[in-house]
Image 1 (cartoon, rainbow, N blue to C red):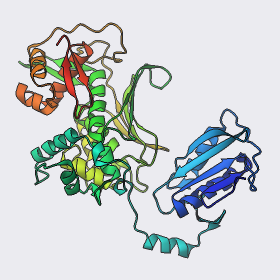
Image 2 (image 1 turned 90 degrees about the vertical axis):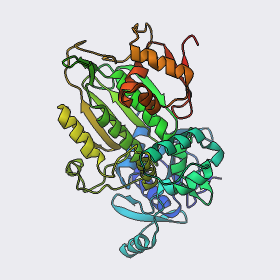
Image 3 (image 1 turned 45 degrees about the horizontal axis):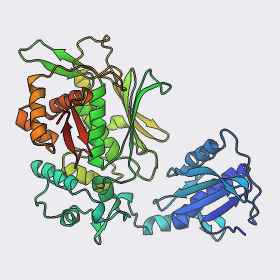
Image 4 (image 1 turned 180 degrees about the horizontal axis):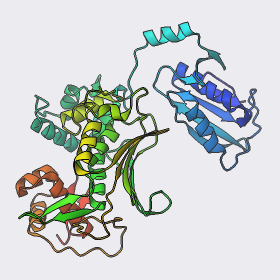
Amino acid sequence: MLKETETTEFKKSTAELKGAVISIAAMLNKHGRGEVYFGIEDNGKVVGQTIGRTTIRDVTQAVVDNTEPKVYPKVEARQIDGRECIVVQTQGVDSLYFAYGRAYVRVGDSDKAMSPQEIETRMLNRKKQLWDKEISEKTLADVNQVAVKEFMRKAKAAKRIDFDFVDVKTTLHKLGLLHKNQLTHAAELLFCDENSMEIQAAIFAGTDKLTFLDIKSFKGNLFSLRQQAEVYVEGNMRWRADLSESRRKEIPEIPVRALAEAIGNSLCHRDFTNPKGNEVAIYKDRIDIYNPGLFPEGINPEDFFTGQEQSILRNPLIAETMYKSKDIERWGSGIKRIHDECAAAGIRVDFNRRKTGFVVSFYRPKWEEGEGLAGGQTGGQTGGQRKKLILSDKQKKVIEILKARPTISRKELAAEIGINASAVQKHLTKLKNAGHIKRIGADFGGHWEIAGS
């Protein structure tokens, strides 16, 4: 016989949805996890639940809309004793959850409203354990050593650390990413290629998500994810050639530094307890960088334009590590840097709160089709016939260096050729799209292959 517990609640049907949301908050406040079953009576008898076209979505939305902090449940249909039921699974690391404006705690198989005194006591006494400081299930054996070494190279070059690489364990310990020799969630995401993170990237034919021309899913450690997303955007937006000076200059439709900042911030400040992935969406009129992390209440994105507002860090360990390698700049300056770069280029950029997260929208200039394009595709390449590429001297040099040193980094390649990293990335993207080179493995720890080698 099924039985209710402090982490399990039964509801006869979704007519009791409000009570279910309250039970979720109560269980999270007591145990940090809980399950609600629709289609089971209080005594454990399975009666089943009618599941319509929008039932799962309605249950999910009710939980998200009526909890604070927001709870993002896993909701699925499941057969129990031969009958259709709905199972809602939740977990959370915040120590105090509210449902419909009130805090509840689980006592046995019932939900008890917390008094103002109980709430105050809990808030005063708790020591909030931030998500990125919690212990990961990954081990030191899962860490990509090449990624750690590359991070150290960048951090040393930025003069933001004062110690050398000895081994992975020592380095992570000095970075504060270990707890009693165990990896934290921050260490897992930053340096383990196998983790829960994902970026969905796509190109759409119009200004909405109805028709897509290309779609990709990126996995890997946080530094690799950032690089993969940057390469995707830079390779699929428009560039025009400025021939007004003695040297040809390629100008992107959206400032590369602003895009890189938005992508870096979206990874650094996202809500990692939300299973939804980050998104990069290229539309006909704009490029959206989305992350599932709600913007802090009481503060507007515009407040950061002056550079005076202080950043509220959701993931301080991750932010501190990315700062050391110069993958993000001074905390709280990201929005200002994006705004200033776009203002200087005459590009409109919007910072928008969403119910499920935050999105930075870069509006694409209305260049005429094909006018002055210097690489990249208006809508991206989706396969089929590749565009023939006549190799420039620098592209020939890139291939020559990659053949000799297939693990060379983009920054090292730029230094050897004598151009900046963004220009190197454009050459790499063109060579990849034309089939001259191929990337094998992650951006951190992988290598280049030359066609025909």
